[in-house]
Length: 277
Image (cartoon, rainbow, N blue to C red; front, side, top):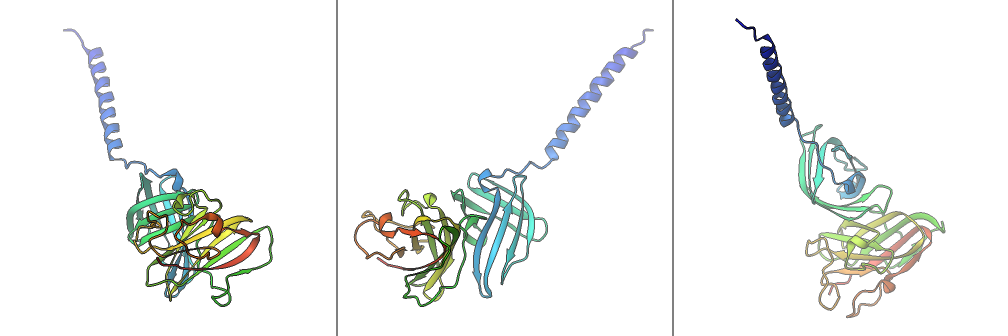
């Protein structure tokens, strides 16, 4: 009788390899897919959020490895949390591993320093930390004061915007431009965008760490809830708006030159009057 030890060994080896391949496939199938994070969102973002206790600064750090962390500073701050995060194609998903919280929604990168996200808590315009950042500073002096300046020529500083004459409730958006390109239709071409909840017929926005140079600021009451300024066929806004310098309202399209002002650094406080068509 012939021995088939060699054949048996070969068959056993083949079966072992086959079993190993099957086990590897099953392991890969069970392994969670690596989260995908839009590179444009990676970094630390901040958002100023008014609340009954005051104003809290929310800080959201998004990491390329699909993790995130959140904490807040100031009165009325929500609890910190962290967990997993994914975002691609304008949609994001967030799941905390430190508290019972999940969120998902849409996002849009308006410019490298500004990101708009809409989720369970509504829409927020987040500013990349270290760039123009939203804030709610207290207005200085009477509202009739058009501009107030402090010393600090040619030093990075803050530009505070106090918007008056606002009707009803909702949100006022503030956008800052450094050139006529995109003004006032395209928020993506602005140097920074933020928003503020209307309170007592006014709203406040702020831009920080700004370099000296020419600027123009557009504000508008988002009555249509589109997060965009609605403009009619004649080039004029169809909802409440205002620009720096408070030029007289005309039936012509808004121009950067009419709203332009020279910022020389330090602190500058502007009052902009809301105009309704």
